[in-house]
Length: 78
Image (cartoon, rainbow, N blue to C red):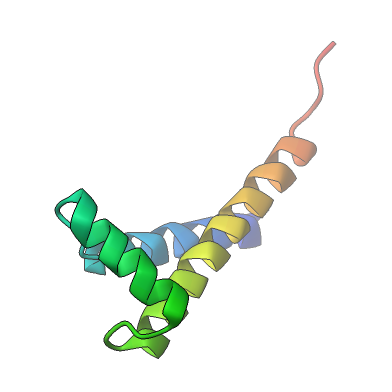
């Protein structure tokens, strides 16, 4: 049980760090331009941004996996 708690704590810490680094576009036009550049792989620092997005997805998947494991490990009541 302790390794799962440590994994969850690490996932939450990593997501907090990565979430604080993201700059969101201010309006719809900036969002459209950013999405178009993302689709064409021409954003500034594209590889770094892609790595951040992949890390974000991995943390989310890990957190979901931990939630599922905790739910499965919880004693079932009738």
